[in-house]
Image (cartoon, rainbow, N blue to C red; front, side, top):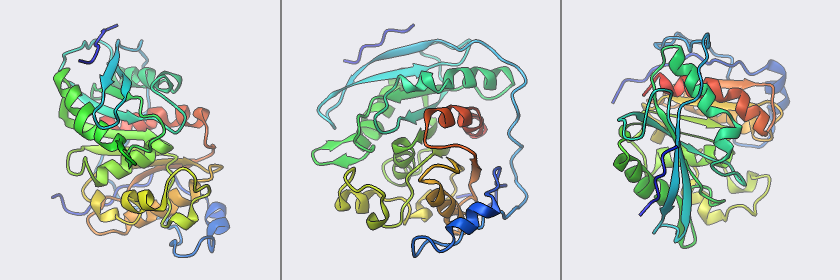
Amino acid sequence: MPDIPFATRPMTRRVLLGAVSVGAIAAWTGCAPSVPTPSGLRRSPSPDAPLPAPTASAAPGPFASGTLTSTATGSDHQWLIAYPPGAKQGDRLPVVVMLHGYGDNISTIQLHQYSQALAQIVANGGTPFAIAAINGDNRFWQKTGTQDAGALIAAEFVPFLKTLGLNTKRMALSGWSMGGWGTLRLACDELHGKLRAVAAVSTPCYATFAELPGQGWMTPADFAAANFYTRPERLADLPIYLACGESDGFFRGNVAFADILANTAGVHTPVVNFGPGGHSHEYWQSVGPSQLRFLSQHL
């Protein structure tokens, strides 16, 4: 028993919030065959209200934490929930499930100051929601061998959040690095049709296994079974936010994938936040407010 100490819409086009520099596009044109030339400078009217800039601040809300014993992985996993100011455990709130990156854990939620960003959103009139995270080790939020970190999320953690009172019918998924991979993969597979929005930050986006910069982190079979890049139609009708720093080794892939999404019938043109930054916690903290504001608009 987990420990609980409390302490089909038509195709639309959405405005791209971050322009990819012409220099960056030129630098990448011709790199890696079979990847389309990015067209991230395209603009079109957006049916959404613009993301509001924060004008007020507030103290973060309370946290809950505990341990979930998983049949899918055969391990115990610590979890953490950040509530908005004024909320308490048991409140029927929308929820963002946040997937951590490789080598990270749930404590990184606080390092990225997501609870502070959530408090600002609520103070500025945004939709209150909870942020829920669970330690997933380095399993890439998918099945590897006999352990299934995808089932940990979809079949165990999400139902568990429902028992705590959270409204999993108003749920979004987000993550950085390995967690961005898990976000887009789960949205294509186990959580397909069950999400209001996704936000993937600094995500490894590659068309083929041969393009991976380091191939020890996943087998070819695991990659082929899980790769979202070649299945953009599975993200149809889902609001999508992508962010990546221009100095990140994954930047080129994110630009190309954003272009693929924008040119796939039935898929929303993603809201993108491409600008200065690397593959670092400093960058992930810097885009956190924009990332969470986007999700709040769709919960």
